Image 1 (cartoon, rainbow, N blue to C red):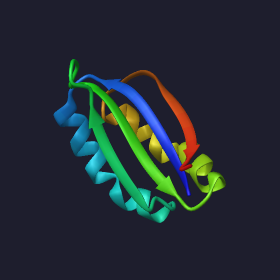
Image 2: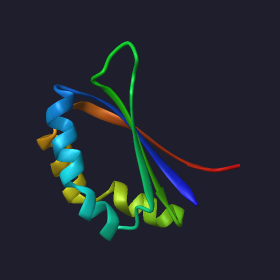
Image 3: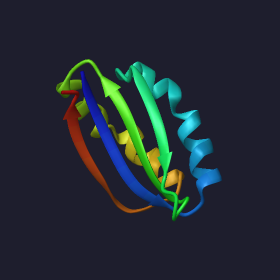
Image 4: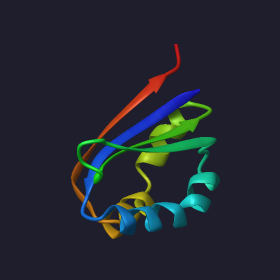
Length: 89
């Protein structure tokens, strides 16, 4: 199993969350098996999201989806996100 981590700042968490929640079917259709959202304690607009996949290839393909990039823009993501992949040890 591979986990995709994405950290970014958003302009407004409530707006971002609506967009994120509406993206659920795209996540499911593209191999996301579990997900979680975290907010920084000192900045509630600093978001880290995790998505789990069966394989690294599926995680990488998801991270390159045009629909994902569009949703991030629509949700008010500020700047370029920090993205990394990890396997549970």
